[in-house]
Length: 417
Image (cartoon, rainbow, N blue to C red; front, side, top):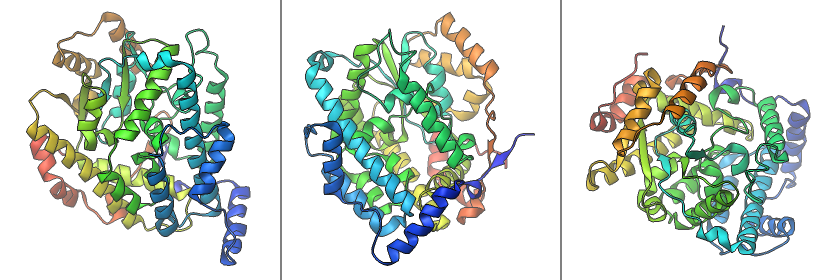
């Protein structure tokens, strides 16, 4: 029997960490708690990297805005504050390291990122399985979870399969699953699985990924209107570095963050092959709200689940609205639209249709690899994510009305519930 996990199953399982939060809460009452200071975080990154060359100061505004939002809105626990401080320090350290490596290897800047596959769909619309299946093409390279978190030095063809950073990434995932067991059923994780673009955009601290860690609506509103160019500078620099070690004809990339800055995305990757996945947005919204409530539950003291749900509904609506605006003013065929039901019903036929949209054909080896992967990878291998819109003050009929414009625009069928 497949076990079901909901966001209420999430939270710290470690008695030691729960004890830390209790002590930290008492210390906070007298003004003693782990500091989240942008200057201190910046200095810590410089010490860790052994350099102060960030390339530019573009990271500074998002750093300040995120910290301010965390302090005012997130209600982080002691553990959450420690994790957040370390996360921000680590991302800025990686930024410096990438900058220093690129300066030492000027040939990296000459790498061309040609015709990447970029998946634009909302979370829970089949983007993960699609990125995995595209990555099975022998001419294509997916961005792997372990390497996205450890860009430099880039793994080479000789070292990629035995790089010790793979084992370190696996250990971190095991620790995450031990702290928050439901997450494994809610989102595919693994060192060798395809990754989103989040870790690359994180190098400039301009990414939807930061909002999965804490309830930070004011940072989210700023992110939706900010210039994403500096984030894509880091994104492309990271891909170029990784490509020096392991050449490829094309990459597989994905994040819904791309939907609301398509013009900027295409400035950096003008020949990108874009794929927009579509699924009934009712269950998508409920699932995303549940997933992010579970993620934030690990790091915060209290939660207003209705506020978290409303926040993520707003983010999803913004992404789709920007995508539809772009679609309305752009030449037909700028992307291929993929229905979730079609992808789940016949992945191979869907893949053939995607390639045909761009005037190409799947090769037989790619198809055989897809068949082999599907035969051994059931969707509920680690349990099933259970979610209910009523937990967030919604009904599926109400969500259907909210999303009516999107469903009608692309002919998206409602799923039976």
